[in-house]
Length: 142
Image (cartoon, rainbow, N blue to C red; front, side, top):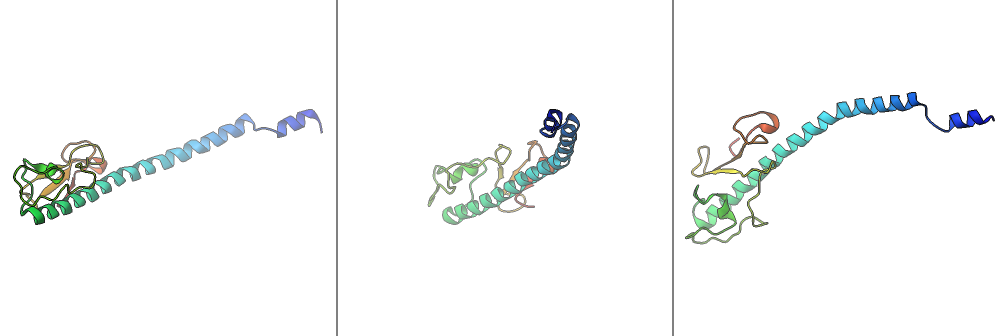
């Protein structure tokens, strides 16, 4: 074999590398948005699960103390005993802290609720009322 033939067989040409890079770019362009959409919906689902868990914990609180926390006491009553609450057996949350929503904001709490005994909601990624997709509000009454 001649030396020029063995050198040529040992590597890739510039055109072959450019074709592979173009294919990888197309794949990233098609798959990337789908992955981001999936991650956004995962945060919304996580928020809904956390809200359901907080509502169940508040029901346990009411069962033991005879009432829900007031709006002033808020969700903090699940981790720290409010002043004069009888039969408080907390903390009611495992880690001893009220969780933030998946976007890092505090959950909103209202008692008495407009849609049930208590209302808990988060305003989504934009932390503003309304919105669509990841910016949509997640509520305990939906």
